[in-house]
Length: 185
Image 1 (tube, rainbow, N blue to C red):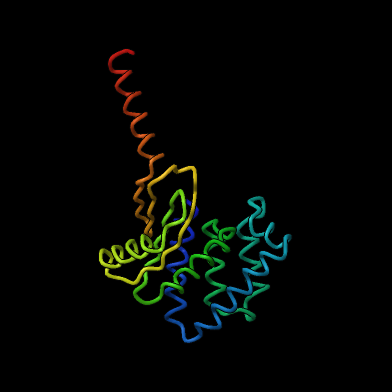
Image 2: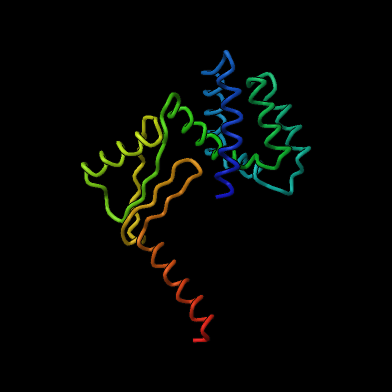
């Protein structure tokens, strides 16, 4: 969860820079290319993630290799990530930026987890209810996880609503344990 928050925070900050730039498409293309390289070049990914290599060395590497080849805003962003110790989160940050692009405008991405796939009519009801509640178009991302037993889990940005049977059973179990301690059972 912490990595997701870090990735989202940096993604939102850099996405603001991207949106304010006249070179928005180029910046996004360069970032996409860089992330692809990290994914394909194992040695490069290891270099970025290795804590034994000092931040100073990584910042210098980024300056020498990318300055003049990539947009200055992207190079500066990479150096900030390096100085903050989050360069290894670059791929996660890019995924968050893709989500922000997808949601550009008045759309909200909502993750719904259920034990079984939602029926079409129920999916429509959920989307309509969320659309009314959030006053935005909804991009519904369905996830099926049988281990929640039933019910649903809804995540909208940093808000989590856990209406799963598993969650309720755990709460009941914890309550019983607390009461048994109180009464010495």
